[in-house]
Image (cartoon, rainbow, N blue to C red):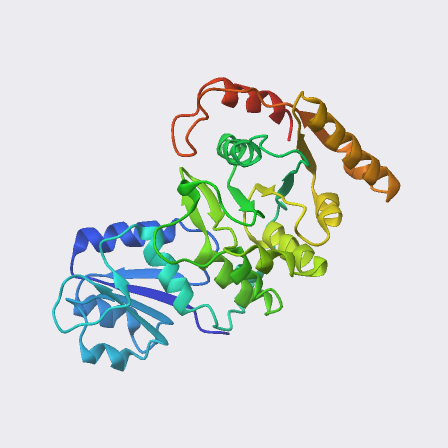
Length: 328
């Protein structure tokens, strides 16, 4: 029998230890059993000769004697204690702390069947794509994702060259979709830890920051995109995955073919209508009629104020999206 994989949280601050442990226990898909303690005695009792895979402790609690526990990874949280150099700050969002932990452990050989097993219900893949420009595609995609949160967990992925919304650009340096694709050929366990370490959230909607360079996105082969989407839908524990697509990615039609539903945004002007007609002609020409059949054309309303991605979900634009959702 393989030993249990344990993440042990040790902090004498009882409130912090309780809240952080509660958060970690609520995170699905982690490859460890979570344990927490607030005293050295409890620490030794939990360990009892078994080395935890990950030990998370604060600078105030860190001591050289902790090295004797034999944890594979020790993550020290900065709390202002002088002389102790931590891996990240203690007093930050819990999801940011988890992201650091996952990043540190990302190359581990995680073979736990519970972690590796595909989800019982595969995520529904929703594509949003249009040959028409300035049709609120990103706004439509993000707000639809937020509306679908009432039905389950949702992941939003942008395939644009550069993100146009500050709300989807985390502060400071961060890795994005192209960085994650670097690990697509890795074993699925390594890829999943990398994936989880890069996921961020806005108003409950999970997302991965878009690629910083358009060149990075355009050079990724079609087969890798298909493998990526299959892994995310099978292992990501999402009910829905929304793709904010761009024609710049290789194999755009094959990606669209993978989608369960596609939204094609249009406008009423002559040029926009001509672009959509040309797009549909190409689908017919290259035997992608199945894409056309599962596509819904919709013309978003022109509004003076587009809702904030993280604000209240009300207004004409939101009402329009609600009407499009139907029985996804």
